Image 1 (cartoon, rainbow, N blue to C red):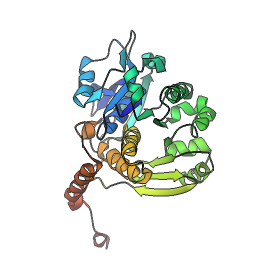
Image 2: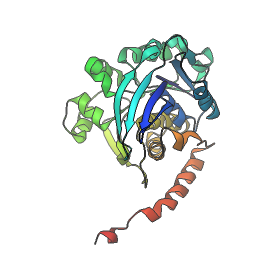
Image 3: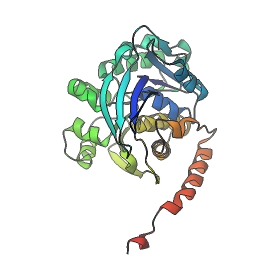
Image 4: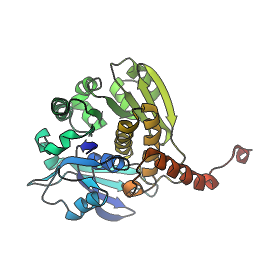
Amino acid sequence: MDVVTIGHTSADRVTIGGKKNVQLGGAAVYSAMASKIFSDTGIVSRVGEDFNPDFEKILNKAEIDTQGLKKTSGKSSYFSIDYDKYGGATYRDYGINVGMHIRPQDMPLSYLNAKAFHIAPMSASKQNNFLKFVRKKSHDAFVSLNTHQGYFARYKNDIKKLISKVDVFTINDEEATMLTGTKRPEFAIKALKKVKHNLLIVTIGVTGCVVIKDGETNFFPSVYQADIVDLTGCGDAFAGSFISSYIKTRDELKSANIANSVASINATGWNFKAIGNLKFKTLEKFQEFVFSRQRKLQKHQWSIEHFF
């Protein structure tokens, strides 16, 4: 195993164009779907008795190892999401359910040999427990972590303490302003530069990301996409593809570029369908794929002369 993603796996109740459906989701799933593009990936999570067996088949078809997917009594985690005709998402309801009981002991022993672990959004106390476990059992592993603004009300200070404990901490621009108490992303980035960190990344939606290391910032724009369909899980896809790339390159700047591409491609389809079938033996093959894909999109881009 190269990468292990840890977090919630959910059976999401989505409404698209008035049609209701239940689909596989959760931060651990999106990050695993992105990670497996480049690396052998396993997932650690808990699901309930209501978890559709077809969902596990989807993970297995994507070549994601599910030994760490533990089925327990109770109901699976879920999010109720309504999408408008433009792909905008409104979260109506959610239930963590059996996901509340995810614990380090759920991790198969074979996973402890992984090169990297990604800890997806959960309560900061649970994330810290997994971090301690991984550090103790796998001393040389690279650990990344991202969070969600829903945990800020209770865990804001605890989340700040986690930044320096992990090898890479990822957060989006809106969350960055909330975490730092600033009004604009550029002010948040300036504040985060002063926070003790190893590697810190602020994602900026379809625009790209900012990489902060040793107090220095680098901005990486995302690749152009003609149609943005669904932004759900793109931050998790960025985190999963970043760590999967990084263990191969040990280059945070190159990995950020690759993760930008994966996240932006993910946004072009519903759920994780745009990246579900992607698998590349080398990063170079993926970059060739992106180059070819962008060439086909050129006809959608307007030259500057169009505006005059």
